Length: 382
Ligand SMILES: Cc1cc2nc3c(=O)[nH]c(=O)nc-3n(C[C@H](O)[C@H](O)[C@H](O)COP(=O)(O)OP(=O)(O)OC[C@H]3O[C@@H](n4cnc5c(N)ncnc54)[C@H](O)[C@@H]3O)c2cc1C
Image 1 (cartoon, rainbow, N blue to C red):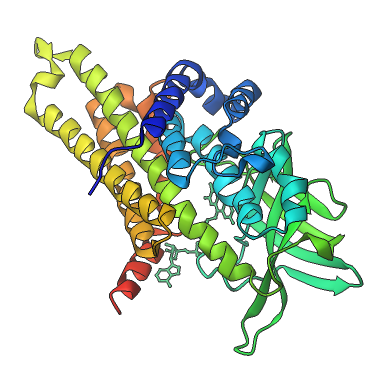
Image 2 (image 1 turned 90 degrees about the vertical axis):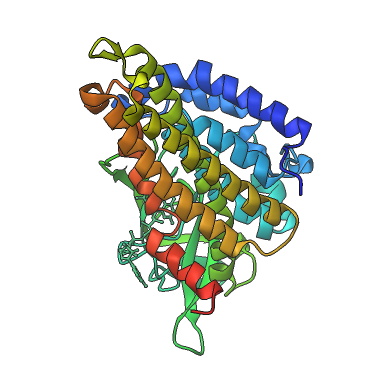
């Protein structure tokens, strides 16, 4: 059993750590207040190759593995979850289906610009009527000659409304299966296609600087050649993409836990009460020790799930465990980090206040905690 990262992974983690601490952290509060990412941050991430990490070098990617992508997401989330989820949604959700299921022509057409970070991809599965029941897709695509005509609405979609947003991979019902459920097909829809409207940004509890919007399709026509994978395979392909994405969300949650440790250690050493640093009170030190315990355990869980994915072994259960544990750990760590900061923890200028707002969605996105428990239960035959 080998627990060490490969030397190049460790080196890469340090590079992203340095970038996160020196470039992202100083701008995080301003981006949160402005509810907008600084384009220069995205440009620098693009320059580091982050948007092309897991894709082949022949398509402009870095040829790294999924764990390496997760390491980058963890280090970014240690200071700013909005930046981390922008990378996760663009690479792990938006572009990944093209890398996994695209034809050679589709890969050559889309991946180089996505890998370079010139364009961002969004993943359009959830609908206003429900996300957990992913197969109950109501958005419809009807074939008319060599075109799909798409009608419907997607809800809570990340990365579709940024100036550099380029495509959405959209799940649409293209027929009915023998069991009466929709036949789901994935279709690439370029941003700017007539009939594809990207709505206004939602007003959110957290992830303020991340772009989340409703997508509306009204008679939107795209070539049938934009079908991703086989007709009818859309749900299976999206679910596999989400399973991988859960490992990345666990990495993001781990980063948030570690950020809570970082902030709490430095604050507790400086803040004094009753004439001594609050770190000298065991009540405070124990809270921080518990945060470290959760960060460490969450990291082991996502490393394990990612290692299985990279080795080509089944990883669904491990991904669900990692996502469930890490997201609930992040919510707990953020609540305790605010407590360590006392009243200042409730002030937006303190990173832990942002961590507190950013943590909750981790128990919801890419499969809720309830859905994770269902999946783990199923793996036990329940
Ligand atoms: C900020 C943000 C960004 C997002 N980005 C994207 C994106 O880029 N692309 C995308 O496609 N989606 C995205 N989502 C959607 C997200 O994946 C869904 O919100 C999530 O899957 C839950 O779906 P829902 O909101 O419809 O809740 P519902 O499915 O309506 O669930 C409501 C509640 O019922 C529970 N529940 C549902 N079914 C069961 C069951 N069988 N047993 C027990 N409990 C159950 C749920 O756990 C939950 O507690 C995003 C969401 C947010 C908030």
